[in-house]
Image (tube, rainbow, N blue to C red; front, side):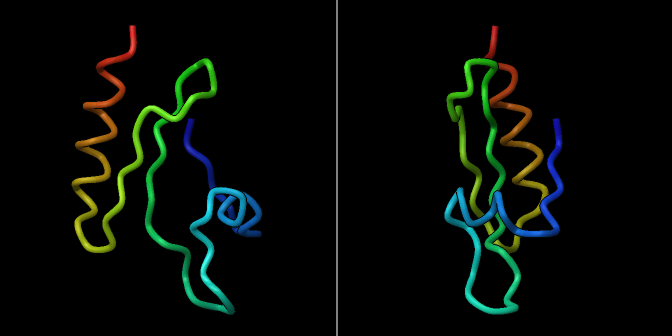
Length: 62
């Protein structure tokens, strides 16, 4: 599932919201069916890395 968070409520809960009108920190969270965080991808500039590492983390789920 992909989440869009225009109100930035979830961003604040996950600690990626920046102060004021600055954009949120770029983070991808891979969350398992048990609601545990499997992986966090954190890079501000390498967008391919988000997708590549998320797919790699998802491939480890049985």
